[in-house]
Length: 143
Image (cartoon, rainbow, N blue to C red):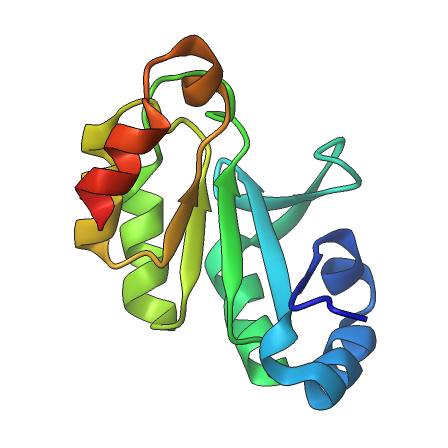
C-alpha cells in the first residue's frame, strides 16, 4: 500500500504481543514512540502517565524486535526551550539503535547537538512556525 513505517505508542505499552507480531511481520517498518514525562512513559495522547521508566520500557521493546524509536519529552514539547539532551544521550548510548528526537527543539544549534549525540533525526514543529528555525538553513546545516 506504500506505507514505509508505522508509529505505535499506547499499543506498545498495552499490547506487547502486538508489537512482537508486528516486528516479526514488518521488521524495520515498526517505530515505537517513547513519550515521556519526568522519565516515565505517558500514553493515551499524553493524558495518562505510567510508572514505566523510559529506558526499561525501550529495552523491552528492543527485545521484542523494535529497531527504531521516536523519543519525545512531552514536558518540553512546544515550549521552545531545549531538548532533553541528557535523557536523549542516555537512550542513544544504551539502546544503540536509530532514535528520532522531539520536544523543545528551538534552534539550529539544538539540531547540531542532537546530531552530535547520534540521533537519526529530529521532529521540529513550533520552531518552524515561529521562525526560530529556518527549514532551508536547517537542512543545509545538517547535510
